[in-house]
Amino acid sequence: MDRREGPAGRDEAGAGPVVIGVDIGTTSTKAVAFDAAGRLLAAHSAGYPLEEPHPGHAVQDPQLVLRAVLDAVRAAVAEVGAARVAGLSFSAAMHALVGLSPTGEPLTPLVTWADTRAGRQAERLRASTGGLALHRRTGTPLHPMSPLAKLVWFSEQEPKLCERVGFWVGIKELVLWRLCGALVVDHSVASATGLMDLEALAWDGEALALAGVLADQLPELVPTTHVLPGLTPEGAAATGLPQRTPVVVGASDGPLANLGLGAVRPGVAACSIGTSGALRVVVDRPAVDPLGRVFCYALTPGRWVVGGAVNNGGVVLQWAGDALAPDLGEGAEEELLALAARAPAGSGGLVMLPYLLGERAPHWSSLPRGAYVGLTRAHRREHLVRAAVEGVCLQLALVLHSMRSAGLQVRELRATGGFARSPWWRQLLADALGMEVRFARGHEGSGFGAALLGMEALGLVGSIDVAADLVRTGETARPHPADSAVYASLLPVFGELYDALAPTYASLRRLAPSLPVDLR
Image (cartoon, rainbow, N blue to C red; front, side, top):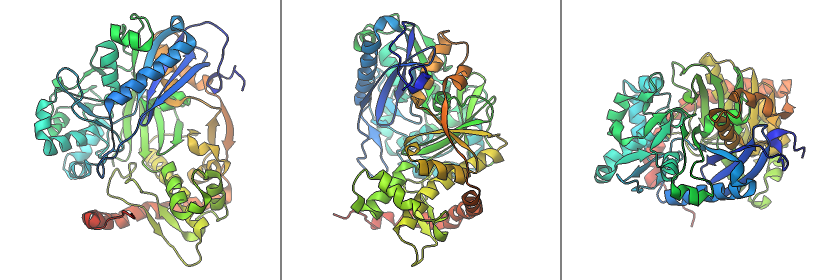
């Protein structure tokens, strides 16, 4: 791989300063070291489990996450040399919540974005007279992923525990407190809590009252480019860095993924499909559409990211392999997609709603479940598998439609994620969205975005606008007119099915406790 091509490859020459971007993800933390030319110099990751001890719960041990962060950073520092490290800069998964004692010890597990226990609380908030206004004001949809809904759940279900909590934070705030001794939260992470007023960049009084927390129980709000002057002695020892090493607070992983893909200019959107998926575009002022179908999160002063995330991406293909083609064996992704490719566009009139994990954009509800509609005797498993993958892409097409309906211009699309390994799936996405999709030539996503943000904050680059030039795109998938026309005609039907089945979803949730699925 050409080492001159920025984030696509490593560069072992040169001796300029580097910034280590630390991306605290859902199942692993990755530390990546880049220089100001965008060359990747080191990349190390450390994983941790996502536990599901009860239905709807998706939690982690915050101490294991903290240990993984330190391990990944220490390995990256050892590879590039501490003397070259100009600073650390952080990215973190959004919507996480952990309750801490007044001295900073975790009293709860880390409750992740995937935790849906607050479904009823979120639905109640959405249905309230001020629900939509709260979404517009904070930018965060009223969904069980939201820390606001999680806090309502804790106040109702664990009131004694809440009395002991001194602070409510996300994982990045806990890491920064341990590393630097500062309890701060950036505007980007805060804007994904449902607790911050986007215009005022301050904690929202109504949201705090609903959550049952005081502003003093939350970290201090700071810009994403805020620089903490150094590490504690313990933080320095754990990372192998000098105490004077500056630490850039950084942002949340969604907005930083746009930066990591170079999608920072007006009209350039970023799309990702991994386990889940998302579509986002950078704008110059906070905005949420009147119907509340999209989110709005902060990136840097004067830059906001608007879009929508979907719960069901690659997890749908994994389910299809397990349920419909177990004979192909585990990890047979190529064979499964080859099977799907045998069916025609539109799967012979078969539509799958891929809501295996509920859904976020544009409906923002934990109620929906997956469904096949239009099934006939003529359909075979290739139709069922293809319809599942088409459902993922059509859901992203609904998000794109919602963004445009909100007045957002999307003229260029850059994509990344595990799905991009498949040329067939890349083409299907372009056909379903009805527009060209460009694919990056390898990158480190939110980690690279964090490093770039850190470079701006530390004065190593003039602006994060350099991302548009540093991130090079390779292959472009262009829509096939005939297949794209099929999906354009299917999209309204696909969108209508959610509303048509909403009463059924509610009934099924009431029945769920009496309908076990355990096959043992």
